[in-house]
Amino acid sequence: MNRKKIVAGNWKMNGLLNEATVLSQEVVNGVEELNSKEKLNDICKVILCPPFTLLYKVKEYLSNSGVALGAQDMHCEKKGAHTGDVSPLMLKDAGCSYVILGHSERRTDHFETNKVVAQKAQAAYENGLTAIICIGETQQQRENGQTIDVCVNQIMESVPENANADNTIIAYEPIWAIGTGKTPTCDDVEEVHAAIRHALIQKMGKENADKISLLYGGSVKPSNAKEFLSLADVDGALVGGASLNAQDFLAIIKSVL
Ligand code: 13P
Image (cartoon, rainbow, N blue to C red; front, side, top):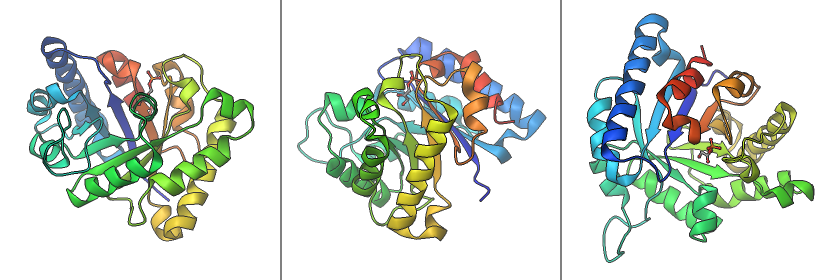
C-alpha cells in the first residue's frame, strides 16, 4: 500500500505571537523550497498544530504552501455552555483541517478516556476535520509486557466504527518516549504498528484499514527521523520538541525524500 508520508508538528503549549510568526514563516519557506526542488507535496503532507491562540495567525502564513493547519484538542459539541473549551466548528472557522485527539498529555492532565476520545473523533468527522488519534503505553505497561494489549485496546475503544483514511490518522506515541530523548527500537515500533494495523483490520476490514496512515511520535529528531520513517508501516511522524525549531523540523521533513 502506497500511503503518502505525513510529518506533523505538535507545538503543545508553546509559542507566542512573535515566535510563531517567525517559526511558521521559516517552515513554510523551507517547505516551498522542497516543493519546487523535490516535489515534496507529492510525497509528504506537512501539518502544523499550534496552540489555539495562534491558529488564525499561523493560517495566514500557510496560505498556498500546501502546509495544513491542525489543532491539539477540541470539545465534542458544536457550541454551548462549556467555558474554556473550543468546538470543532471553531477549529474549521480558524482554518484547521486536522485535530490531534487523545494525546497522552490530555489523557493524563484531563483524564480523557478512550470513550471521550472516540466521541471527539466522531464530532471531528461530523464537522469535516481529520482526527489524529494518539495512543501509546506507559513505561510500566511496557515493562510488564502489556504494550500490545494496551495499544490494541486503545485502538478498539478510541477509534470510531466509521473511521476511514480520509477522516483518521493514528499516532503511536509511547508515553515514556515523549520529551525524554528515549526511543523504542525499530523492531519495537514495527511490532506495535503491525498490531495497530491488525486491530484496524478487525475493526473496519482490510481495504479500509490498509489506507489509514500510522505515525510514530516520541523524541523524533533529525538524527533518528530517517530510521523511523523508513520502517515498514510507519507513514510519518508526530513531532513535539523538534517542531519548535524550523531547521530541525525541516530536517525531519527532508528525511522522507
Ligand atoms: P516529543 O517529540 O517532544 O517527544 O513529543 C512527542 C509528542 O508528544 C508529539 O505529540
